[in-house]
Amino acid sequence: MKLSTLFPLVLASVALALEIDFTSTSSINAGLALLAKGLMDYYNGNNTGETPGMFSNPYYWWEAGAAWGSMIDYWYYTNDTQYNDLIKSSLLFQIGTDWDYMPANQTTTEGNDDQGFWGITVMAAAEKNFDEPGDGMPSWTYLAQAVFNTMAARWDTEHCGGGLRWQIFTWNNGYNYKNAVANGCLFNLAARLARYTKNSTYVDWAEKVWDWVVEVKYIPTDGDAWPVYDGGSIEQNCTDTSALEWTYNTGLYLAGTAFMYNYTGEAKWLTRAQSIWNRGKVFFEDNTLIMFEAACQPSNQCNNDQRCFKGIYSRFLGLTSMMAPTLNDEIQRYLAATTPGVLSSCSGGTDGHTCGLDWTQGKWDGKYGLGEQMSGLEALQNRLVWTRSPPVTESTGGTSKSNGTAGAVTKKQTTHNQIDIETKDKAGAGIITAILLLVMLVTAWWMIF
Image (cartoon, rainbow, N blue to C red; front, top):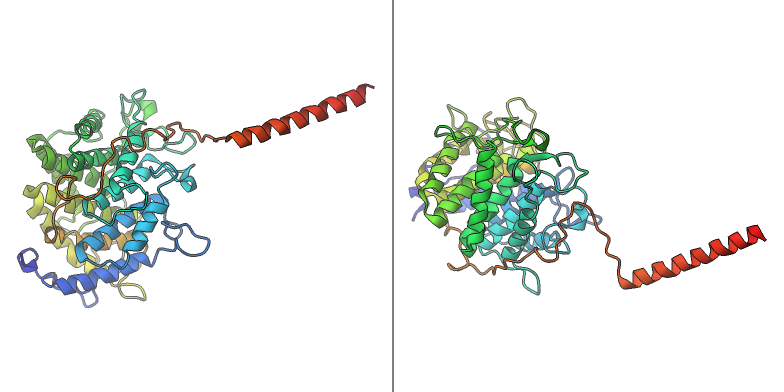
């Protein structure tokens, strides 16, 4: 199939813009290579004193996981392998001692959504047959299952009748908040693992998470356009719902329902996907259909996290196009309409291909960062979903092997750090205690006599 049958010619509407002709594979690859290079310019994890897998300050650990997902997609759609070794080593460096993306360098700050986005990235690696770790290391599917299992073990029925808290650890702000993103990560992983492994347990979990989110009205199902709200607190039994809508939350549930429809063939999942997408159009301007982050962009209040959300949304839109093809034409029409805005925005910086935040201005808006670069790259490359085969499964060519018990045996599920004391440490501690006791007795005898 020729690219010209899939995409209209993108005409530059401004004098300065990144130039990509979507009827030409070479033009597409050259343009995306510039954006990928711009994204990797923020990576410093292999520098002396830095942490492999992490991007430069001030970008948090979760966003690094999401960024590697963008780079896996970049490789998949362009066949450019120059970053693959770095992607692979970065993903493996952060897996933690229990191979579940609970690394020591994030022990005190990691949230359920943080862990979830790394799990979603390695799930994509499995679905796209990205180079397997090998050499005694866990498979990509194993890692995704370990993330799923450790998250599912935190399902809390004591408050709000179920759901995941935003935070894992009691001392972090947000521990008493149950939100759409943490539960959306669990739902998205369950749906994709169900399709990949054909294990009905994941189907059950997808149903369970979906039912709970609907029950607490984080996704109100009145009418035919369903928003995805941010969350609520356990003090109010999750009834004080924050009505904020973020692109990436909508994307998590949109793609998750599409995966469930693709695997089960059940009409209810297509209805759910369609209803979420009907509301998801709110993130595109009425006249131009250019994507924007409605909750923060108009007020110029987007923080570092929120500036990458449009990229994650674009990725989930691409997956939805493939998993629920009846939505493809409209989704791809919206992405095509967004393209001129992205091209004009990604024309800034000294390199001439730095992406900005606001794609509606017809030019670079002077903003830049990892999130902006991720978003520009994902919005463009997810127009290419039909140039490659859909995500594979374990029975349709997937090389990544599953293990349903991954992360379930050795992982400690408590919310407090535990110190493992080895036998030799216990012996040493016993000797020290004996010496201190002897000193105390001698001192007491001297004072008395």
